[in-house]
Amino acid sequence: MRNRFGVMMLTIGLMVCPIYLGAQSAPTKGDKVGVVDIQQAILSTAAGKQAIQNLQKKYQPRETEINQRQQDVQQLRDQLQKQMTTLSADEQRRMQHELQEKQTVLRRLEQDAQSSFQYDRDTLMRELGQKMVKVIDQYASTHGFALVIDGSQVPVYYAAKGVDITPTIVKLYNSSHPVQSSSTSSGSAGSSSAAKPKP
Image 1 (cartoon, rainbow, N blue to C red):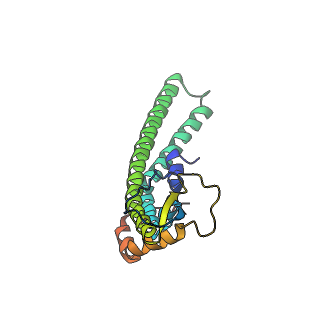
Image 2: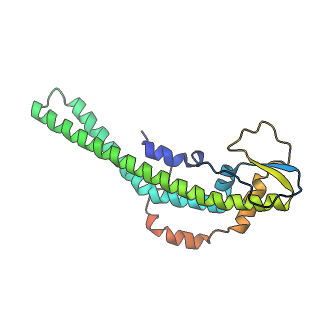
């Protein structure tokens, strides 16, 4: 059974903190309306993909430790249940106490990891989001848009072809904020190379 922290890591793309678009440029005479899914855009950029991979690598050791401790707890619980009728009262109390201690340590590890992971994730998405908003603002003001709606925050029930500018924004972001070469990024992650790849 996968722990809650592991599930959170796998669903990182679904839990992005809200990023609001504001009017930053001077008003233009444009009358076009555009829709952009800013969460999808951020996670589709080269910088976004690299940042998410780095974040998962950073927390892989914690997930591995939590999984191991979860297995230890389950093994001790199974052992206690199977041997309940043959163990002495003192041995039962000792094993029950050991089980409680292991469960307490596991809960603390999960809570600490989840809190740290959420903070790093929100900080990451906020930084990327601020850059993304600037790209959207510049593109909208240059191409005569009067309004750009964030489709990930506001329900959009219909949009004519060409109104969704998400792919264009992703391309502009990649060109404006290129990522480091793969050799540089792999070198910085050398300490995590021994970690198991995520399933």
